[in-house]
Length: 59
Image (cartoon, rainbow, N blue to C red; front, side):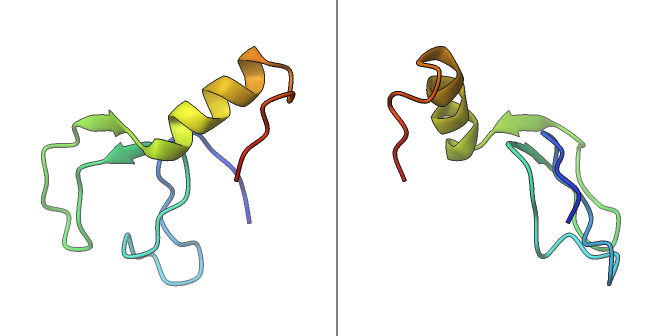
């Protein structure tokens, strides 16, 4: 699986039902949405991991 900070389309099915990344993109499988981006919980988790150089690694 390729990693990216922004939502990736599932490579095998070209669907947005499974999303990967730290930033949510407002778009659905039929191409509808505003394309607005918002930070997911994982964004803030990863931001803290980077800031503490991994010292505060939490699941």
